[in-house]
Image 1: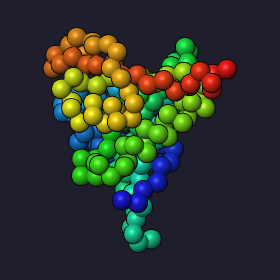
Image 2: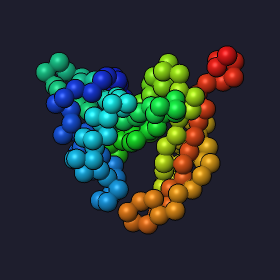
Image 3: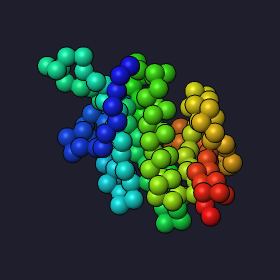
Length: 162
């Protein structure tokens, strides 16, 4: 699939919220208010993946996005990564993740963390493939009572940090 990554535009919000609703079950997916709040945080950024249209007359369709932030301790945090179910396993999630890691590395973030449900095997496999390691479990993290793993990836090697 041919797609491009770009910055968030103000008119993208409704589409991003609809994608989030398709990617996660009720109670796990974000309300409009929650997603808007995460996107508007002073320290966050959003990267959007858009399918390139085959014809100039067709509108390019948003197929995924990632929202991430950097805290004051120079640790990045992935708030959400969403790719439409029908276009998964085509490299979109990987490109979104690599772009986010690159931006956080440029901002001198030492590491990046995220939370994933302990029973979300596809997400855990995806993150493991990208060198994320679980280092902590948060009991009853999700509204349905499921625990979450906190995963981490170091972004700056000791050679880069000096």
